[in-house]
Image (cartoon, rainbow, N blue to C red; front, side):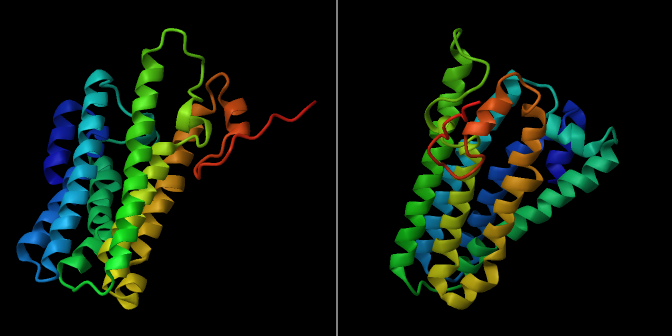
Length: 244
């Protein structure tokens, strides 16, 4: 995060921190492989899962920011016109602590043994669901932006079932990693670290994710009508418009 803060100051954009998110969590998983003494194959499995997810996410965000170098409205609203010191306190320090916190299940797996291989399988399945929602949702959004005949609001594919398939997918990824890393180590490690995926889900829905983005999106023509018929987070069949 210190390196990211320096880069942010040079390029004049706080949103570069989003690129660091996946990389930072991958580094945590790598350290657990190198210094941990837990079940070896699970340490490697978690590194692979986190690296695939984090690498895809960081690369996608990097390419998007290269194409649109302006500041993310969410961070602009969060900083409220404050300078670099405010960004360090409100963004880089907070997200650095958040990386350590949400990675607690991965750290637990680095120093514990597998108690249930079935739960490892369940967690991997959750991770797959999450990655599919993220990657397919991002691909569908990119195709929508390239379509010259697109409507005012993206409401195709997964976006017809949830207004934020990428955030929902991200939540599934972290519940899956918690299941693989902590719950599969026993009920006590699972209970002690369940705050990590809960906090991640809270941030994705309320703090820095969907709710904050919706404040901007609701000003776009057609978005309030789209929101009225589409679930915000959990995928659900589209609601029929009410008759006048």
